[in-house]
Length: 334
Image (cartoon, rainbow, N blue to C red):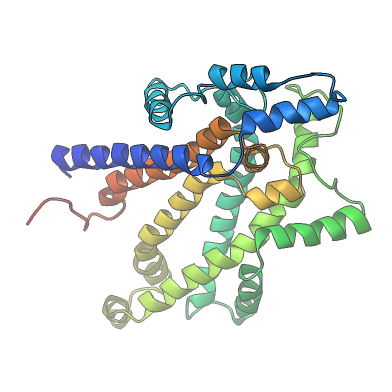
């Protein structure tokens, strides 16, 4: 790998962020309606129409958030603020800043979905490889139809089934939220155990559904590699099955599986929007859904841009570590 290649990839990374920032700026503004006007009219309705003429208030708020300027000037200001790391204020949660809202929600999503994704990848990939290997116990073949079934079930649908079974019917677990209502979080065992208790159902929704995906993918790769010439040659030379399996089979599946895991972890920051909504889990997915419903332009832009940036960063890092995972890969010209 050369320095020239790293610089080129970094420039492409910056271009990706710029294109993403441009898209997330313009797309929310294509929606009909004015979020400021909608919010003020909602406040007027709740107050029993006692606010009188609200047109002046609407214009003042539009000026406060810069929405009274031409679109091109809003865009220039947005890019300039973004370059300084300023995502602006939330329209629906003013005076809270977008960065503060994201930082409050991100840990919930990263811990829950990140942990569940890694667990599902490890279990699914291990079982998928064992199912496909020719010397594995026949009992493991039982997992194949299970994987095919779970892989076809969406996360949110499985979550609804778990809520109905373990939340409503048997009442073993809470129906939603990240912590008991009214409980003040703290750095103590009671808070941690309560958070873990609330995370069990959404985590199992992800793990059960994702295990099938990882297992079927790993099985397909091991079956393909099992028919390669170097496997047949190693078998003919009398290599032990364990060496063939670990050093020849699993090692050659490392690159695609690691890439898939990296992309999955890059997408962790987005959360599973529908899953967090049905569980009322206070992560980025639920925050994004609420921001869309309230036409909170700045909050939508901040969350979506963070999601795209996380994926772009993961892809950039993977490009740099590919030669470490597989020495056969080289970016130098021949």
